[in-house]
Image 1 (cartoon, rainbow, N blue to C red):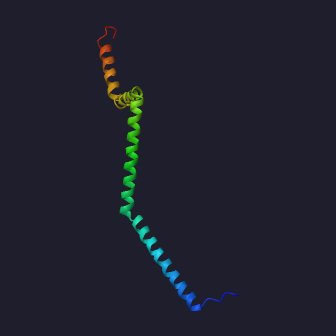
Image 2 (image 1 turned 120 degrees about the vertical axis):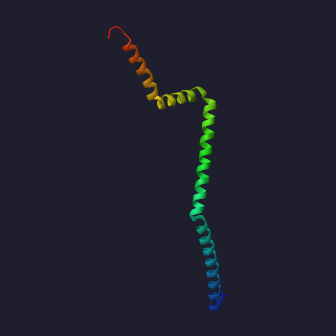
Image 3 (image 1 turned 60 degrees about the vertical axis):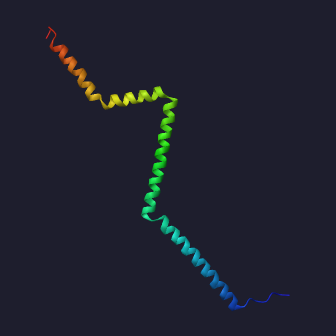
Length: 106
């Protein structure tokens, strides 16, 4: 009761059929890769990712502002003072020069 040996011609036909199916799968995979690695597709996907992350950052900032409005106002005032520091310093240095120029001790 041994199984008969498979016909060599049938084995060859099965192998060729398997090879053809594997080639089709490989061709489909390569087509998908070409689409995914297309520079336009990559740039578009990067833009979508940046937009999504930017939107998430804005949303997180809004939520933080709602929870801590005083802290955000303090940071904004500090940033404004830092950006306008030269004008503020000039304003005070003019006053100091004007006050010393008008004093009788000088």
